[in-house]
Image (cartoon, rainbow, N blue to C red; front, side):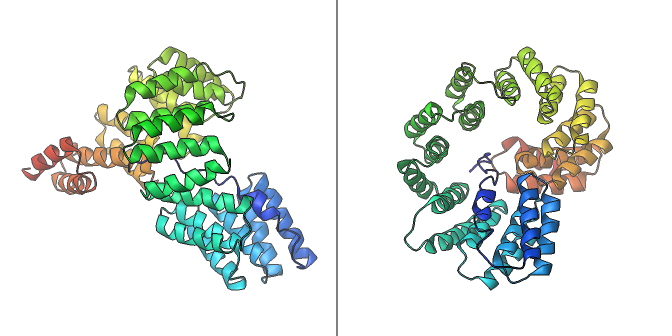
Length: 387
């Protein structure tokens, strides 16, 4: 399965665990600290939330929900190992906690450990005890994602079908079931689900873009492009629409309109627009402006392997191979799966241009082992063996 952006933001956490806030009779001080942490979490201040949950546990370490809340904060901070540790503590206190197993499953998804995720989410469902509500629907939602990401496409289709039948976020699940059908080779069913996803009341530019990306990635460029053209007929007024429209025009090759919309999005504080602006400048040969724009993107604190790949390419084409290598290696250090393939290849080629043929050969051999279908890389690998 190619790397698709189907992993969701963990946006359903707060409503679930605020519901248990007042269910236990913990000391008022600990409860107050926990409540403060939940408020910080709601506001997106995850470091402060983490500190508050830690303080609550120091006051009262007997409540499983405090550890669960702490784990959620760690999830948002990207510290999945500490999140798992907190869930272990929660399960020691309450081995029958449905919420703890749900959280554990979410962490395993983030760690790409999909079989473990499915096992944890199944345990969470076991504790439903015959009652089926929003929590159980949400757990099924995450299980279906783990099934999809682990290439268990028929199981994912079956789970998405359940969610669609109970009318639980049908637009989103038609889209995801469509991806599963596409992976199974059932293009007709995939296109039917994509149409249903776009006819849903919650259809957005982003969904059109996701469907475009998926179809284009698997060679259905004509159908993919038709969805972009349909997207331009949407009438919405959300602030993020300028960025989405910029992406649509970017993929259609209309850089003039793309520049206009990305500039508007940038001026409204959308940092991702800087990445696309830089890519357009680079494609037009204005590498100086492109590099400066990429630097602005990095300075916003945005994390992306792609931007370091782009900066490395510019330096490489300028003959500054040492700087290019530094950018490629920095990008690889981010472990961004979307750009890993390009970065690994470019790293190997850069070692070759630095005349370090042994390292270049080693890097290219590792690349070919990871991506055996890249025949151009195979030819390069054979060449490097002779140096």
